[in-house]
Image (cartoon, rainbow, N blue to C red):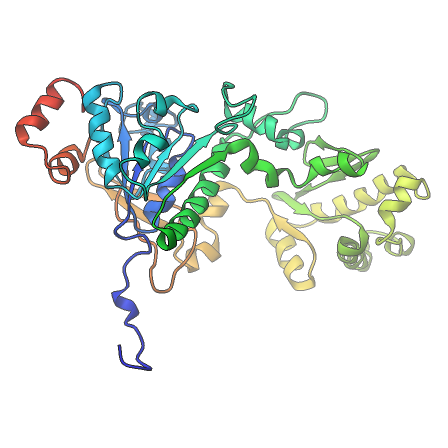
Length: 427
């Protein structure tokens, strides 16, 4: 290129174009492969004959179960091709090794050591392909006293410390309705895979990445576990808020037509917003001058030391509650934007789908499934790249949809060999 010339960005290919990913994950790690696929990688979802157990997870399209009707499967498998291989057989494992020898990434979420027992662990595959980036996603990591523990979303959330904030104060904690633990782990695994790939561009060598969901959730508990190390009050859950010692802090409030979140907190960082809010509440006639003029910066310390009775704090919360109940969610949000208050509506699913910002940015994307006669609506790209935009190139694969394309077309099996594998149930 001549000096000063500008590259033709329209000719740029997707970021990971030319890279191949073998995705062996269960529901523990599906989103990792999808992220790499969104970035342009050729992701091959490897399932056992008959399909992954994920295909049996509800909800199902039109309420009718079936391996091609799981909405959960649809959610995390776009931009992937799909094959079936029985890794319990010698032939299946041999085909897997051939694929791994040509791959850039392997992603797996089996129990620690399970693939190594089949000759498909990191040490086995890097002997064939030293440049391979091997991503392992598990509940507690590859080693340590909990490495072999049974897991569920609820167990991992509890082990991470997050669950202390979930649910009502008078009963055991609850899990969120949509499993979260492995979404955190999958996103972290995708980021780590890109870092390892960048390192490989410089060294020529891959490496194994050990991603533990328990550790990925560390930031999600908002540093509450640090309280014990500094002698602070332990944060406790309560419905719609948290407790700190005797102080009950609501984070969810009623509006005319639903719920809003309002930050009615104190200190040098947040007390200034509370002071602005209380000035406005006074102007609207919801409180007296003495309430307006409380020291909202030092108010938490006043409560903790007893200089301000808890009963007076409860009365002030009642003032804020009455103010918020006087308006709709939209009115409260407009007011917050005009005056810089920390108030926002709690959105329903319909609110999110119709969100004017999402609509204006054409966030919602459509993938057509001609076999089912459907157009599936997906959340849009997690990032916008000016030169290499994310594209939704493929709907989620059918069971074994690309067996012939990959095993015959890529690996070079003959049609006779392919047919024999199919008859014997290896693919």
